[in-house]
Amino acid sequence: MKMVDKLSENILDKFSMDFLRNQVLKNAYGNNDTLVAAMDPRILIAWYLFFGLVPWFVNSLPFLLGCFVLVTITTALAHVAGLVLFLFGLGVFSQTGYLLVVTWLFGGDASAIAPLLVLTLKVATVSLASVTVFSGMDPDKLSQGLMWFGCPERLSFSISYAYRMLPILMEEFQSVLLSYRLRGNPPEHDTLGGKIRYLIYQVRIIVYAFYPLMLNTAKRSRTTVEVLEIKGYRYAAVNKEVKRLKLSVLRVTNNDLLFLSVSFLWVAVTILISTLI
Amino acid sequence: MTSIHKQAANQSQKLMIFVLSMALYGLATLFSELIPKFQVGIVEFSVEYFLFIPLTLAMLFDPMSAALGAATGELVFSEIMLGQFGGLGEVEKFITVTIGVYVAGRLVRDPANRTMVGAAAIGGTAIQLFLGMVVDILKVQLAVDDFEAVAGLPESVFATEGFAFLNDLLFSGILFCLLPTLYLVPKLHGKIEPLLGMEPRTTQTALEPLGAKAILGCAAAFVVAAVTQLLAKSGMSLIDWEADWAESSTSIAVAMVAAAVVVVAVVLAMRKRTEQIPSERG
Image (tube, rainbow over all chains, first blue to last red; front, side):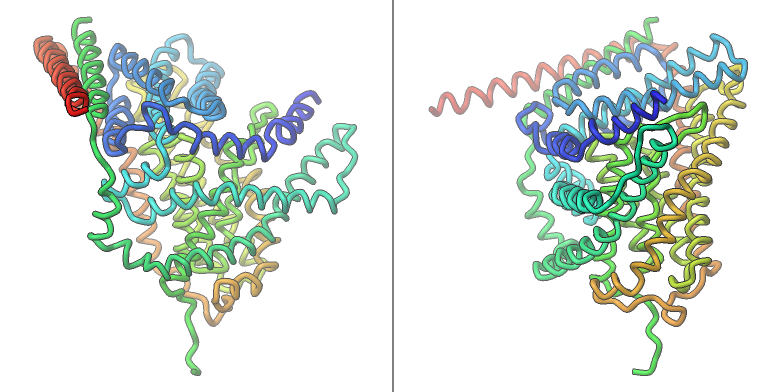
């Protein structure tokens, strides 16, 4: 009973479209003045490749703890939106906390905790590194950085496109949804059965709303592609000269080198500690 | 022109389908990422699955573009934009979504046939979920060291993953993949294609049914997905190697720290100098 209450409250009030839109936009464009956002995307991606991969393979506890502290600091420096951090916490728990509970159900004892803690530490480190890099960076810089590393043009196009189109898409989805709601007649939701019917009604409306949305987006994507064709997109996407021109704004500064070398120093110290123990 | 057109889209139409599928599925996954999950006992009711969008598009348009678009959309909108990019794990998700949607799209020869649409929708979802489950089990087995030694862990992983698979298939699969697809495909059929300047798919214009080549391609792609996870296994030897030199020499680590200190000092010095130069000029 209480749970159903809480669920409908959650979906309908706290997670209103405006709230979501604001959080996503804040995440994308809200923090361009931070230390992380000012850095060169190539350096950050290389940095991420280390902290996103190496923790998976290493089991030494001091090293993992050291990495975790470092990425926590960088996440704080990146001023990540609150919603993202909340999702991160939820994600870490759902990935390993749930497993811990079930392990206990199957008769595991306290010995199950240590490996799971290590696993949690790994998951948390890797996710925080990605939060720092992908959330802290400007989307345009991110796509330029990926392009420099030779990612398919389509991926960097998708990132730039997504960040620009998302507010429009969300607004349109919201207005379609509202118009369905205006015309609809929601079932009573005082009793438990009524609440479940109400939930089903909400989900049905969301599915219905995708019908006009699909048609509208089809029109829009045709326009987008036609404009891209006019600008010679498919030719430019494979042309080396164009790529060089696009990437000529990237520059590695002393700040980037400092960031890299301090990270390196930190990692070296943690390795030293783990050898001493 | 008496020849029958096969439903092969040209390059810019493929790009249109890609953009369409990416934008819509990306938007939907963004929501599903944000809507809280809801558990009754151990049965999880999550609105995790908006797979009906790419399924619908793959049944109406070129399946490969729709599938790739959906996978890219999920990656970009819900992973990269929210900073939840998980590295290697995303490769697996990308490939399983692509395979599931692509197979479902190829199975449907005539979108007006509801039985075919329904079977393909649930089939594609089942493929995607099953591949995801296999990879998940592998992942946990390889990430936790001495997996077998922990009492109760192996059974619990098989049980939770198997249960999650059935739960997802029966709950999300039917409610969020089968029913919406059955509603949307016949409704959009013949209406949405002209908007992209294409002819609706019929039995005559559909691509050839899935051949051995396509199935082999899917299998190869899945192997790639599994291998990205098995990289973790090659990481096992990396651990041994590390443990080796960790015991033998602290001196290497000391040298590394020393080198790092020198690097930091050099960078700081460089920074000072570049800061001084403009001030000298000015």
